[in-house]
Image 1 (cartoon, rainbow, N blue to C red):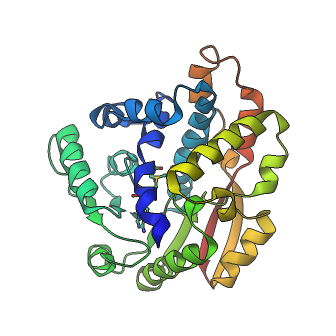
Image 2: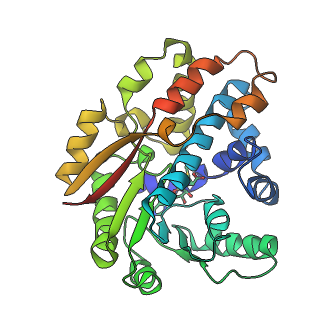
Length: 288
Ligand SMILES: C[S@@+](CC[C@H](N)C(=O)[O-])C[C@H]1O[C@@H](n2cnc3c(N)ncnc32)[C@H](O)[C@@H]1O
């Protein structure tokens, strides 16, 4: 699918925005190593309103981590990991096995090198592998690493850029991992138009973000969103999954990035941003 190769270019801004929270392990180091701030500034052309995206990234990152811990599963497969540092963070616990994957082999090799430098060598329980979630290239190798140990499959910032038909194909590949290993699928990638309508003060940020992203990806990003959570649930159920709905605010109670940014950028309506990100969904799904 045409849209996925362009989505590859979207992983630098989240790395920079996560580093602004200040308490996400390794996030500053990795953002520096890949010069993420420069890419972010080039892309958003100094529009500081986009700092509203920092708590958005912070909440989705932290809520996945906390949710995975709550499940008690000891193995994680992350799809479309980009420059996320959750693999490094979670494998500080030696009982966790973490397989980080992304579409681009080139980027995975680059990340592998940077991660090994940051950790002072290879960590036995952290694996990095090229895996294309759409075509399934790399899936067989991933399954070899995962074996039959129950696994949490996670991703963030992937389905928001995909049309529904592309989403469905990716979900088929995720289901094949769930069938082979058992376990659950956790994602905050449920973007609904109605949740945005509830925040008139944030409309200008949403609008500009959608414009910049649509231009970069060559698609109308709104076409990838669901109308509301019921429509999204019907879609995932139609793909053969049962859905357990949660909000990110159940897992993350405050925002470090807002604390760091509110004086720097008083134009942003931070109270609304906190409400928006706290209400955002994170769902756990199982095979029906
Ligand atoms: C917005 S970035 C998010 C990266 C990361 N999850 C984060 O939050 O920083 C989207 C990621 O999706 C990856 N991606 C796009 N298409 C993919 C595919 N078919 N299979 C696996 N990864 C894909 C890109 O390479 C990129 O790293």
